[in-house]
Length: 234
Image 1 (cartoon, rainbow, N blue to C red):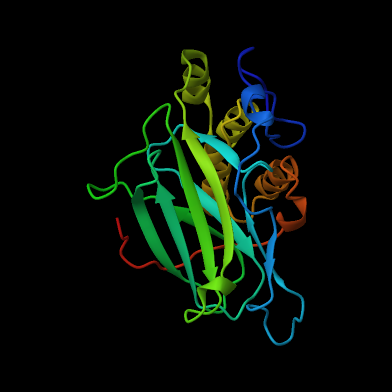
Image 2: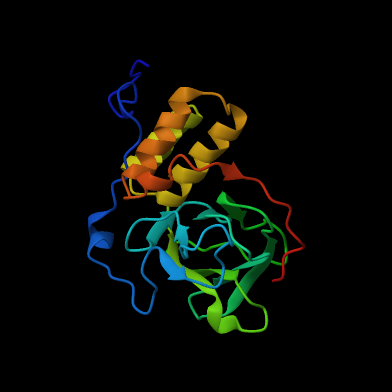
C-alpha cells in the first residue's frame, strides 16, 4: 500500500498500534474496577472458572473520540446471564443514555452504539463522560453483577488529521485514529471495515494488532457478535 503523501501513516507493514496521548498516560481512574473484573455467579456449568468481563479500551480506561455518538466494545466468555446493561453519564453525572442488551447464549465481543436521535444529546467537544457496562448475573441480587467502567472524552480533530482522513480508505483511517490517540474511532472504524469484508485476512491481522497494542491480544481472535437491542432509555 503506497504512501500518497508524507502526512499519511505507513500501513503496508504491520497493523495499527494505538498511541495514547502523553497527557492521558499518567491518568489513573479513581473508583473504577480493574480490567478483567471477575465474579463467580455467571459461569456456565461446564466452565467452573469465573467469567472475565473486559471493556476494549486502553488499560487506564480513558479513551478519546471525535464522534458525537461513539461506539463501545465489550467481551466476555459464555455465561448464564441473560441481560447486560450499558449506561452513559454526562460530566455532571446525569444519566443521558441507558440500554438493556439481551445476551442469552452469547459470548465474544459485542458493540454498543449510542444512537443519534433527539432523545440522546451528542457528546460535546472538550467534555468527559463516564460509562458503565454491567452483566446482570442475578436480577434478584445485583451485588453479583459484573461491572466495567471507564471514561470517554470527545476531542476535536486538527486540520492536519482531517486532511489525512479525507484521503484515507477505512483501513487507513484506523491507522490515523490509532496513531493520534483517538481510540474509540480507531476500533469502531476497523470493526466496520471487518463487517464489510469478514474474510479479509489483512483486516483480521489489523484487529489483532490494534488490540495487542492495548494489552488485549488474548481476546483479539474472539468473534464480533451482533445483537438485537431494545429501544434505548434516555
